[in-house]
Image (cartoon, rainbow, N blue to C red; front, top):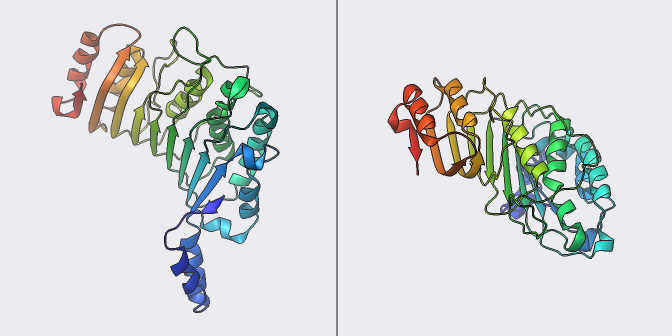
Length: 291
């Protein structure tokens, strides 16, 4: 855990000038807060312990951007218990509510603990997203997920097999979200992670900007992947596999959507001819860019 600011020394000096400078510099100093989860060093009793300390501090009110990193350590199986992490995320949600100025969250996932626990560790995306949903932060506008992890536990369709969740999925959305960026790369994510991420989009009634790279599969039953009332202005999908019905639902955004990009998007139903015929009815050619 650490405060991320390249001007830390300057702010530290300014805090010593006088009372006015102290409060101004403190506000700037705590704008970005980074949590680095490391099982080999910290263990799993409560990897958010330093975050808890911050949230009990008056400086919590200054945090506007939160970065959560799962690092590349490879702790042995005995050091990792997925049930412990699920319990930690429930406590994490309670502490998140103290960050009433939080506007942006970045989740960065690299290599998880190895061995038979690898696929359970992949559930961290789902559990942290659910913590954000539970917290219902009033000013949270931007969410970015960067996922770069490999595993050998795959099914026939390329998605990871996933164990039963430790608790029921959260159905509520993050209503205040205006921007979602997903950079899942070529990693193989679990079905639950795909479902959890798609729920964020489907329930985002305030979304204006969506850039999604690497959502491997939307549920076959999905007829839409975005909230129909969202004021969507920008949408880019890349390396994604989804039903054509999801794209046909873009007609809901004909009055707001200004920029549409489709890059290596594969359909699980119907044909591209049907999709493009509909898009041409509702959007000018300059709005849609397909490759």
